[in-house]
Image (cartoon, rainbow, N blue to C red):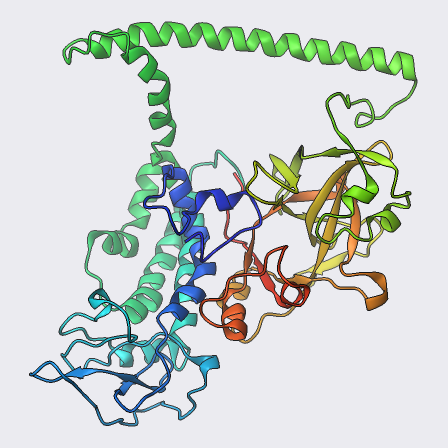
Length: 505
């Protein structure tokens, strides 16, 4: 999946590369995959798209009602052509632009092949049937790939509500009225999404989702209450004490408890005393700095010890920062403190505070650039109306290309994104994912729109995913998103989505 969904933020470390045999992920990281999959569906569905029609292939109905081709096997193992038939809702257009994944229509029990050149595992099983009548009754002529995207998007929304991973780390218990509302939403999800798109699935998980969400909420409050990750993480500590036992199955548990509990109590007490001492030391240093240097801001009082200074001209060699000297109003030979990361107090949309790290590395551990995308506000900009009533500052998006100490304040130099309308009935846009593109000024002003944003105006880090549907239509199935080293025209043509599903805990 690392090939399908490259990311511009730290989430990329959760995804397996193409040459990895197994992904080493924790349970928490695997659960967060629920919020990433909706953005990868467009590319996954495109990978199974059939080739253009040829004389040796017959007809098979595609997900949007068109005529596409498939093989029918004779008894002697040769491929026989199937005469094309016009079905209800079909269209004669067969352009490569709107090709989507194809399935059998249930009228043929012979195995079908999705694409030539693939191995035997890509044959549909004998007797495979898909109820296109049930699908069109709910989704009409919606392309199958868009319906699958809507399926994963809706599941991400429901899972976020059930798990209570939307705003805070320790959510309050779920009320009965909320559980009852989620029960209705989950039942509709199974009836309107799962069954028409995936067919009849008879297993305990689907049954529990459609019938027993209310019971689970009544018994447990929310799914986070049943999360065992905190208990499992305690095994790392106990493993060290297990090595000191005699490994006897009858007594090693008591030995671990006797040694581990007392040691952890002492370590916690020492850590608390150390934290108090560090806090007192910081207060003393701040008072001493204020006495010596007069009135200084909190940011200006921070030590610059160990922070490297880089010339503005050298920073201008980073991607998109050719105009940095003009934007800062400094000579290219001026040296400035450059930071690799900053820990700051972020805020979610509802005002919930949390601690986040924003990074801007031109080379991170010799693995390439790491530039986070942030959501921020601009001082003095007119507020916008939310739901036609409430006014709030306009949220902007930008990719952080450098973190500097500028005019006694930590600032982020960002290449700005601009908001664009999603095309058609986009399932991601309907669920709050904002579509973005690079903001490009007039040709005389340089390649990218740059802005210096004080960290006090940065709201939070954002997870930006490529718009794979648009990329596939423009460049084909095997095309990868444009990187910072790609040609300028490819970078400007890229579009992205702000992943509104991901929970920032």
